[in-house]
Image (cartoon, rainbow, N blue to C red; front, side, top):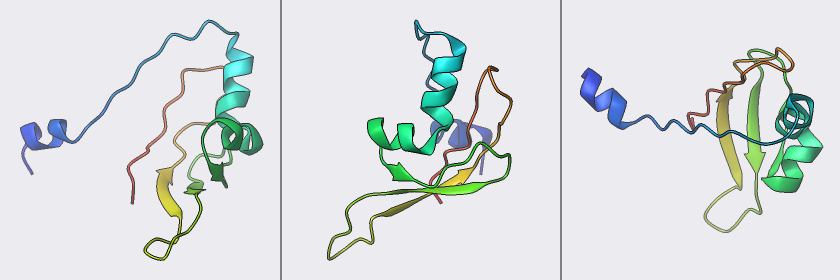
Length: 86
C-alpha cells in the first residue's frame, strides 16, 4: 500500500477538554465510566490488552466491535489508543 493510501485510511481527532487530567483519565480508562458515555466494554488500561465494545446483538450481527490493543497506560499523560477495528 502506498503512503498516500495509508494516510487516507487514518483519522486523527484532537480535543482540548476543560477538565483536570485525572478526571479525563478516569473517563477514558474506567470500563464502567466508558460504558456510561460510549458502549459496554472490557477495556483495561494495560499496554497490549485487546479489548472489545459490545452493543445489542441482532439477527445479522453479534454486537461485538473488536478493537485494537491498548497502547498506553501512563496515568495523566497524553493518551493514544490503536482503535483500528479488527
